[in-house]
Image (tube, rainbow, N blue to C red; front, side, top):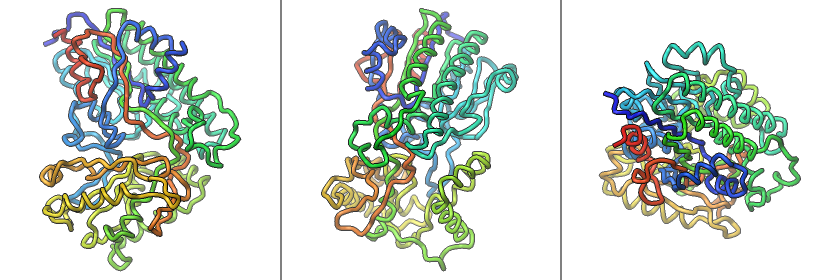
Length: 500
């Protein structure tokens, strides 16, 4: 049954757009569309589970569930049954728009990150047309009626042709290609989304601009160059790059204007970001060696490893020592699905599980520490009675870390479980470590420890910030207060559609 009263809802995600930058551009009249929308609506702070990991924010939006329920925190998930990692595919998630479609609403969904493909028979559904995050590694389109349009009659998105990677802040050619590709991708996405919204007359359209996310990871130093983290030698005397990250933001604003025009002035509109962006240089790597040095973890000796594990270790070592130019050729030559499959066994070292109480999980932002808990892990070593004490001990140790010059390394340690009963039921990391800027030093020397490390992936100059935002034009009673929870956004959308 369709309860729609003729209203339409347009939800536009600007993936990983930084709220403070958007506010500044609006204040300077450089994002006139969002300024006009804000004048008709209101600004809301969006609170999402970004404090756990960037991978958790979209699954929470998609399902309305917290990470403890949906279990997603990153692209690679720890599997306690197999004592290994698996790649996220999202197939266990139930998107809120599937129920709305079943009620009779025509729904359009365009490149929502981390969303499983459901296969609409009405409206439109497009997955991985121009993605930042890969799930299947291929474009998926539904219904069949629009497949020919997407695959044959519309220009391909630059991100679907090339991952638009760079070697770092001095790879001017790579950065220019990345910026140009993302700016062009914004234009193509806006034009295609507008066409589909009009042709299908969708009641609800959820369109996500992924280009801001992709470009900001590489270009954030061009926005916040005065930050102390960018005072290292590698950032000095850099040449200007065009188009700039700001140019991409402004193009998103223009395309949002086109989409709002397509749905009409009476539509409910929400433009949102689930988390933001801030300065970084790569991802700190100190947890794995530090936990080993302090006796919390121990790697398996060569003799203890299987032949498969030994081969993976050799392959991982070869990758770490391969020149960046050859790595780029490797990623260009092989399909993304192949490189991801080959990456899985190299993501973690092999541990001696009997002598490992806590270990680090591969992370793309925060540090993740997992307790090897008996009753949850197949080869657990920490008894449930010792869980809280082990977490206390680790938290105290992590908060005390300083560099050889006395600068704090850890900003905050977050526990994802209130106690062992909750921990036994969930699959999240037990401790989430938020870093201070000193953690991005290269090399990083820790006072009182022999560990010396450097962040990996130093080509990335932006990391996720916690707060998101939403500019909402619709019924005021649907959003009370000044903060909107990511898990509640689907309810606002559904009530706007139903008029209840």
